[in-house]
Length: 397
Image (tube, rainbow, N blue to C red; front, top):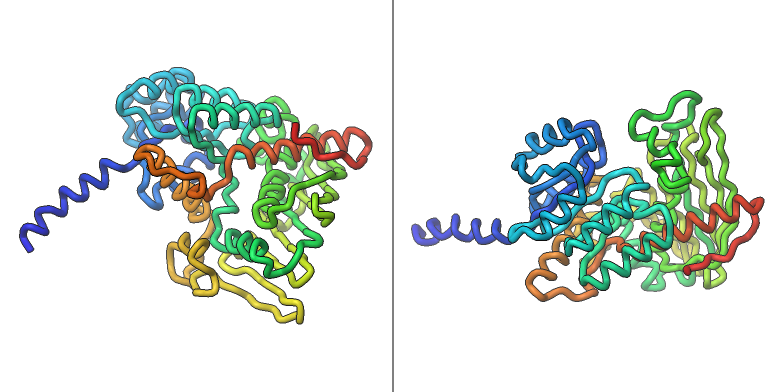
């Protein structure tokens, strides 16, 4: 017993030595999303933050680094310096997380890929489809992993919906109704503080507001759950609130490659809604209903109109999706856990890359190619809207 007790600290050190390290660009003292990523990563203890450029304000960046226990020499002046230095260090970081405004994503991600460092980037991954495709090609050429944090696809029930559709449980998908309304930008002269200001600024957001922020989530959720590819679409992008220049309410008709149809609605002016992402998938044998704000359950309606409410934490959800459950049923899991689930898969893949055991089948997180699909969606919607709300073929160039 004494020998076993003495060996425990050694085993813990061995496990700790295998823990990954990461850097962050953005996520300073005044931000929300950077802290969310750090908390999500910390849920499993698979990676520790070791470097960063947290703000364009050097003082704020150093303040953030100190609060995170990062050595001042690894709190860099800019992301270019960090990418070069960390890529050359023997103990350099294993991956970087990018949580800056949309317009900066491409250059930052490219710098770290060129330095040989795996990348995680908040969505949308870039502001153009071409840029996203370039990053994907670069990551593939360098043998690097690239995750885009479409957080909602980390929910156990969202993964289960994907399995149900793939298994044929509801037959062939016929139509999809998907919406993501919010109300936080509904009022004139209110740009939603720091988080809203850059989203409403064409110079930082990439020329779209609501569609880039919410529409890309809708596109990814439907694509991930159904496996369907968009063939063509018709979009009406409204600017409703006086004083705005970018869209704050979007209505989109979709036709998929199997002939199914869809209707997407995203809004930031829907008073009374918070983060009301809802997906309804109607098939030839049944229906699936999933609501982000009650993510511990999923509703399945069979052909005979039997309504089944399936809850996370029980055997009805199989091992593939169920393995991501962290606590027993009845103790609600939420958004942090969903993001943590994406990072869990990503960290496992990065570790496997390091020890030579990685296979493509291990990937269970949104990839850069899915991020590129989101930008193709945005560009097709812009083209349709600019052409007077006409049908546009969904071209993947």
